[in-house]
Image 1 (cartoon, rainbow, N blue to C red):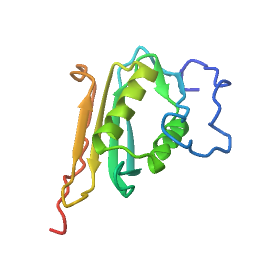
Image 2 (image 1 turned 90 degrees about the horizontal axis):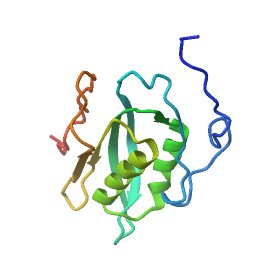
Image 3 (image 1 turned 120 degrees about the vertical axis):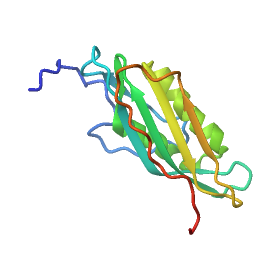
Length: 157
C-alpha cells in the first residue's frame, strides 16, 4: 500500500452503514480514527457549502458555507460522521455565532488537533450577512494552509 500504518476501523458505527442524521447536534455521534501519518504536519479541509440551521427565535432557515481546516495530531475526523453531525443542525435553533463556534469546539474536543480554524460564511437574514471566524491559535509553521477563498456576500452586483 502507501506505507501508511494499518489501523483498526472496527469501532466505527456509521461508515459503511445506512445512517440518518441525529435529531440534534448534541445527539450526533462524531467519530475519529487514528491519523495515518501522525508525525507529519498537513492541513485537512472540509467544505460544507449547503449548511443549514434554524433561527432560534423565528424558526426560519439560515444558510451558510462552512470551511473547516485543521492540522491533525493523533486523530482525524471520520467524514461520514462529520457529514451527519453537520446535518443534525438542520432542525436546530441557534444563532450563527453559536453554530459556528459549537462545531469548532466539538471538533477540538474530539480530535485535539495541532490547529483548527472555521469560517462560517452566512447568507443574509434581514439584509445583513454575518460571517463568523475562529481559530485555535496561530497556524503551525511549515504547513501549507490555503486561503479559504470564500467570497464575501455581494448581493446581486
